Image (cartoon, rainbow, N blue to C red; front, side, top):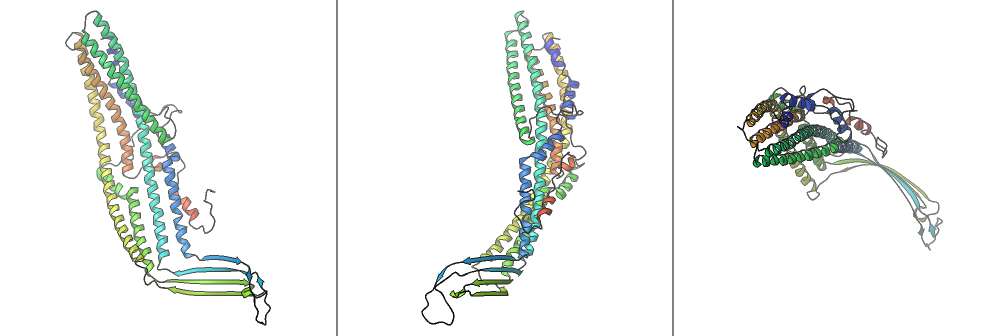
Amino acid sequence: MSAPYQSLMKTSTSSLLALASLVFLGPVPAVSAETISGALARAYMGSPDLNQQRAATRSIDENVPKALAGFRPSVTATTDVGNQYNDTRAPATVTKKPHTDPYGFQLSAVQNLFNGNRTVNAVRQADTQVLQSRETLRLSEQNVLNAAAAAYMNVLRDTAIQDLRQNNLDVLKQQLKQTGDRFKVGEVTRTDVAQAEAALAQGQSDAFVAQSNLQNSMAVYRQLIGLDAKSLSPAKALEQLVPKTPADAMTIALKEHPQIQAALHSVDSAELAVKVAEGALYPTVNVTGLVNRRYDNQNIIDSRVLTASIVASLSMPLYDGGTSTTTIRQTKETFGQARLQADLARDQVRSAAVSAFNTWQNSKFIIEAIDAAVRSNEIALAGIREEAKVGQRTTLEVLNAQQALLNVRVNLITAQRDRVVGSYALVSAIGRLSASTLGLQVTRYDPRLHFDQVKDIIWGVSTPDGR
């Protein structure tokens, strides 16, 4: 057997499985290498997408103290000062002067006692919106972690494929050289040389494509993880987190998936919006307290007037041109839309869970089938090469067999990657992909902390973090 053939045959089934094991399933190497858990932790802490969703959740938290403000009085202080001229000719019993400087201040407080339960329902709606935003945040966390895991595995896959392509390129170069030598001594024809040259050109093209794919994957990795991919450790599938059957996957997804939970909270919020709008048809009862102090009143020198009052008022809306009734009908339609969106979310989650489970389940059989194809192609290539030595096979047949073996080896690496990524996709599809379930070594973001900090604040403009 010739030298280039021996070189290629060194990458046997056992060595290929060792490569796959090194890339995907092997033990953790040196401490300096990045692990998939470390990469996901970086994405969890530094993802701009996830951080902006956290900020959005904190913003929605403020709807609760804003709604609670409806239970509190509104206090207003006003003051004024001016100059007044008055020319009085008639005799008077009081002393007047042509120029006075009237001024004073007023303090008023309005406390609502009843407004058709709009405040009560607004507070309940705000609480529901907070729960919805937390589920949206959980969904964003799942998407970020799932995308980061795929980016990590893509770099591993494309690195392994590039190595295979480069090794194949080296073999094709040696093979072309040897074919040229055999042509010089008349063992093969010019056609054989041309076929070897064509195979080398195609191998160079494939190597460039593999290099480009790796560079693209590394760019996506940098975007999602926040650091350049340099030395990545092996990664394993989430065997312990995936459900056992499709029925289990659907049951868990329909119960726990954040997309469904967010949609259900949206339904509750829309229903409460209807009640808030209906409150506009009810009477409003307010109590108003007023203190008014005036100086130089009515152009009288050194006059002082103090007025204090407390008044209860009831107002009943009779007709506002149809604005209130239109709003009520509009919110009812929005409520109906939210219910339909919840049904749509259930269908989408159910479909995604079944699809992800089937993909995960079939990935095992795909790997087994490709592994068998690798072994068969190795046997076929070895036989064709032996037959080529005695003139029973052409150079083209050898090159085709060699290319077929290379292709199934690339497919095996891709299938190994798909197995790992599929496990993350399945755990995400059932709603359980999170920093907690993955055991990431990070400080977990708890949205309840900010909510507890702001829900009872009645004064001040600084955020809890000092901004």
